Image 1: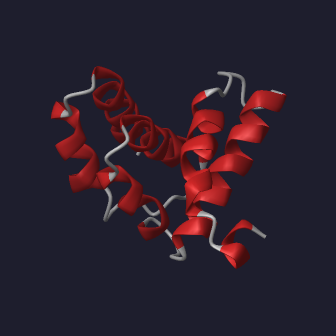
Image 2 (image 1 turned 45 degrees about the horizontal axis):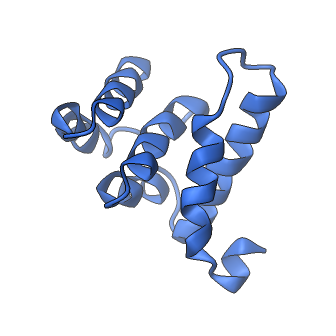
Image 3 (image 1 turned 60 degrees about the vertical axis):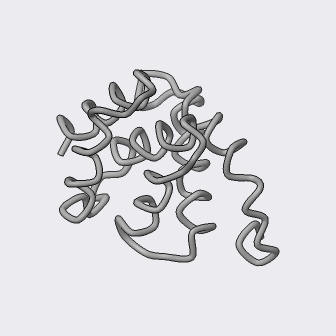
Length: 108
């Protein structure tokens, strides 16, 4: 439904949900985070890794961080094309984004 109405303003709220996940893969928080990351992908209107890569350029650091985290939430995120973008974020001005990028790269 979000894609149908094109409510891109929902992305920061979805990013907050992704970032509120739990370390346990079976926890309700993690399942909610996966759903929020999936909604972010759908909102982008793209498929595969491209659905998340645009968020890596967001002006909002929490959206950039959530996009990095999202790459760790999916079994096969198609990260080959995202690797250089994630590597660029290792030097992001926001330390949480840099840390999330490092984790995403380690999970590849």
